Image (cartoon, rainbow, N blue to C red; front, top):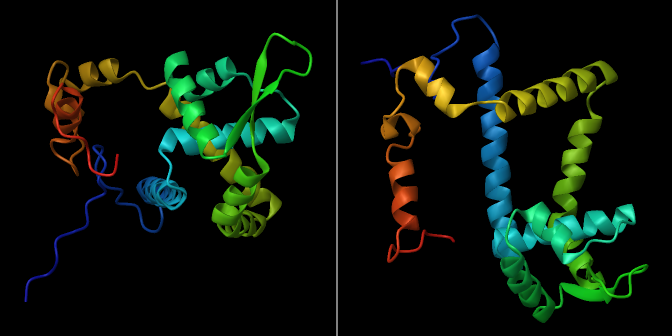
Length: 208
């Protein structure tokens, strides 16, 4: 009977030989969380019958409402990273479905603000409320020292990811100029598939 092959870390820098949980195991757990969150977002938009940008727009609008900060179409476009024309199309769509409304700006009579409707707030709470309660309960289970460690780690990881220079990294590894070096070892062809989907006449990606 042959023994199963050792599990791969899935990361380019190899495995961690240290006994017990080590850096690679931490990153594996972080990646597992990201995968679970991505799946959750997919289920949410499917359940609400919306695209990802639509769900994000509702999130930003509800956050702005709780903070008491008016949000203009330009503000929303900047948060979503899309053009003014795309924002107008998105808002028209969400207005037709009763999720958002355009209102006069409280201090500038020439401007409009965008607000999420009470119906949209209720729908989001119904769809995500229990999951948010479970997430909060998990975070509350941490003692203050654990919470401080996790918070510092996640902020440091955000900084690490935010400062990656992919060209510099490829040059250091000797893979600069090789498009295949951008492909994940676990998903060969992912970059080529993404490029193909952007070409005119290419079939739409599944689930888009």
